[in-house]
Length: 116
Image (cartoon, rainbow, N blue to C red):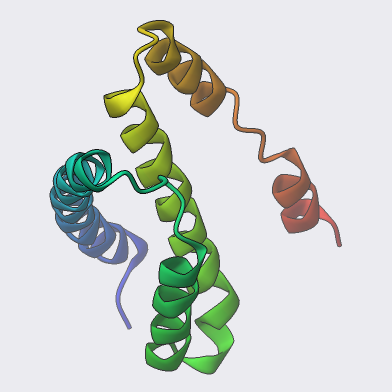
């Protein structure tokens, strides 16, 4: 069995890959925003999100499905916030989005994790 340090090192390596993939995804999100501007589409596309969530559910192990779906819902939110920031004519929108992201409150999850 692996010791805690080895496991954490493996997690650190995975996290490095996740950050790189996240940055790639956000760059593609920027390209999507430009296409949406050119074609007059709204930022939110619920049917596309539902389609992705369905694929994620199929690919996920049963016990991880709710977590996988939650991860993607957060990714959708971040992508849409980034797109709004990119296309907004109001320069303060980006600051407001960053402030809102800084204030994400995970107290309920923490409470559930720590309850016995």
